[in-house]
Image (cartoon, rainbow, N blue to C red; front, side, top):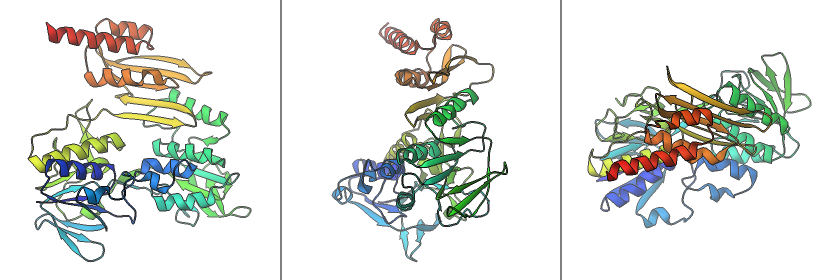
Length: 421
């Protein structure tokens, strides 16, 4: 049996390791498109800051790890997939056959359709090659424009602030991190960044990037103003990396369509991570949930089903975001935006940058978000993931949403009592 995994990020690496455990006699090939050992994109900001060296981003620190597990790591890009013949065409003109295939190719940064987006000095922060270019130009005191204040943008923001650049963030939405915050919480994050010396322009778009006068680049805004910059970083979103699947017969929507076992519409082809439309625990719906814990879980489940057949279903991953923005921790879990007909409670302290919001469906906690209050993170996730009735604890949380841990312990004790009865 030859298992081929396309994509050497967390989903691919975890899948390869689990396949070796589940299927000791199989051949396993891990295909990575970059000329680097498998690494974590989430570690790149730490490399930008200088907290780690490049090899600190590698998913496995032992250089012999993959060879010791008899996993063949190949640095080559897949250009097309022939599912009928179970064959991959590679960028160097060669081909590779598979018995079972896992596609874990992650996502690709999107570039807005504006003039100058491909100029020298305008980069994504997505690969180690990008990181080296940014390190060269993002010296202390340099002027940097960051396009995008979503989750990825704010991770990059943290690293740039640590490099002590003069930073301006341009975000088209009316708040920061709009996919995990409501207007109150997102605006508080913006206010915090401004208090830390970072200029944040929300409800603003970059209209053009051109050659500058006093600086290498001139960033023109839809407000009519412009910013001179040494460096522009584009973090305006990503899309699943599926273009190479055109003509393969594999069904693709926002990402690759998979079933509960991570199998695609093609026989013996699976998908995992940011490229796959996986199941959401809270809604049961399928969509791309581009977070590393989901990618790891997808990889593990896909590997088990590739080795043993379809006997392990994915129950779904709780939508989860934890973000550090210049020292201010924000979180969101589950259906943080609420459900139709549901109840909510909110606690706001703008002066201290503390916020908590709980969302209920009947007497079940289905979503939560917080800012500057990390002590509740475990209880939030636990209550949402168990989906247990809060009974009279719902009212107590509506009176005091900081009692999450008390509610979690009470529901856990009730569950234990029910099981022993």
